[in-house]
Image: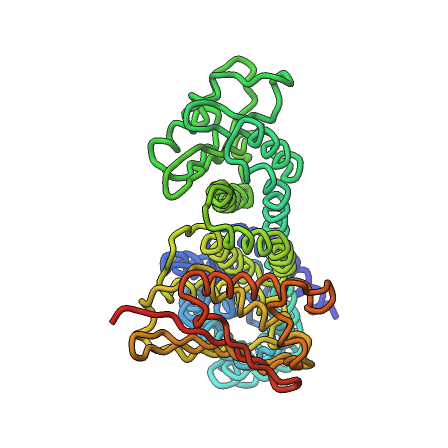
Length: 566
């Protein structure tokens, strides 16, 4: 019982050392899978050093040293892979042999330590059933100690002393080493989960800020929109101060040391802000000197400042400030970067919307007005749902959302390449598939020579949306949509086919009826189809109108053709 207690006591001391280890940035990069070779070398030395500390922290027992050295090198192997484990084991194993070269178990324990790091890496990744598997970790610790006991029996002399040692030490050592590795794997798991949770919460905060500021930034970067935006950021992100500057002046400052209706001109000349304008890149300032706020009583002692860009041109900066030096955290930096990208998209969308109001094509304006509000709300709701569970997917969906709205509103040209329309559909489908998952399947049968063919903008996506909303989603289990395109005899033939619920002849014949009753065609269906059909007819004549075939329970086919140059 005393041996158990002694080993458990040293396990507690080792836990303190391990908590110190996990604070290293190299260790955190290892957990996220971005550790460099230099990081792995540093970690090999750290885990090997931890093994040495465990040796010194052990206690003499029957001519040997009872300790938890194997826990350190095994963790190195589990977290860093076989090379890190072997390197850590080599550092700790050589020291173990040299530390007690004439001892009963010096050679056997030295060899075992080297092998334990590599074996832990190999064995854990074959036993684990999930990330950070504590049962697999316990098994690795137990097997590693069994290996050490076997080497003691094979190499330690006299053999009778080796047998006596193993008889007394084996069970407590196997149990405590297994428990030790399992406990530390669980600790790492909790740290990793906390990091992921913090990032997910930050992503959700970023999206929430974006959603709240969207109505203001749609009108461009003005004093009014900047003031509203700065107040929202400070309120929701808990930042000490927020600054938004335009190309010539400070537009908004929300923070301490200001009257309610004034902003000091000196803020525009802060060193950190000038650096952003000069470099075009985000700048991190962790001291008051780097911030450059020399005014008496200035409380801005650390900052992250990012450029606000529109079409790759800097039109302003966003600065997040803390009242303490070294106060800007990694999450603050991620928040600033995320807001910069999202605000850039919002500003571009705002400019596009202004252009859209002035556009001569009334049909395109009507279609955009129909799509943007409800699709934006649903898309943001979907992305928010992924921020906690799959932050990378949420980020990718944001990119798709930006692509979708850029393509939806940016073009006022009469025609665009078919490839652009297909990219627009793919961006839309990425959002919808994230919402409805396996219920929506997409197939393409598009000939390569059709991709450069000019087509009217916003001609495909409304038809694909129609197939999803009114064909696939009402069908139990979802379904499949196929987009086909081929060129033949100076004609581009396009076909959108779904295996959805279809419609009867009565509903089919009423699709383009000017006197549709509110319930005769489901909401949104008539507007989209009529818009696309009207533009085709206006551009190419009545013989280019949409051709629609449908059968209840079978699906719907929408096809049309466009003249193209030879």
